[in-house]
Image 1 (cartoon, rainbow, N blue to C red):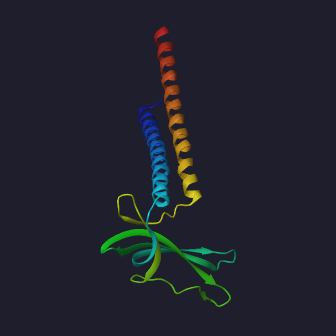
Image 2 (tube, rainbow, N blue to C red):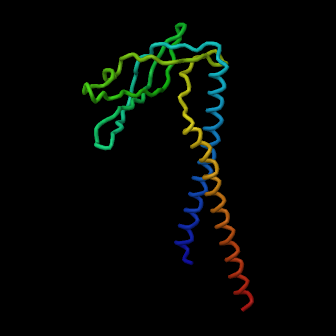
Image 3 (spheres, helix red, strand yellow):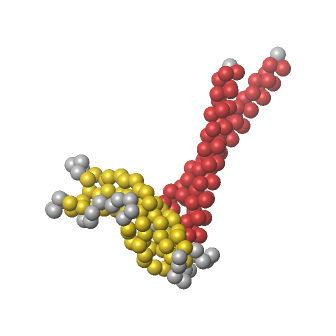
Length: 176
């Protein structure tokens, strides 16, 4: 095997191991943080709906089979004030297209508009937007852990196989 190919193989192996470890870390972080947020929300002594100002947003459209827009998903950065203190957060809102009346169920949203959001008081006394995590998100966090582990194990087995192969080749050369 040429030195150049060997270096490429080593780099690819290291890259895949880093990706695998990153998937595991991201999965564990996602599971733990979503569980903590969920617990804080359930144990909160103050949950309320308030108005929040849209600071920034991005949109994406979901289309039906004929290519018509069914709804637009807005991902917002919002600002809200509670007890004189300003908080910021991120949330999502869907605006549905009413095909009978040929208009959105409500007006399109813009910067500076206000939307109603649900907030809760954390155990530290701050307010946060209510968690929007879906069961699918949690499932993806959980799936990332074994997928990452699979990548790492496969690469470690590949390294061990290469080491055994080199050892056998060296033994054969020394016997000759």
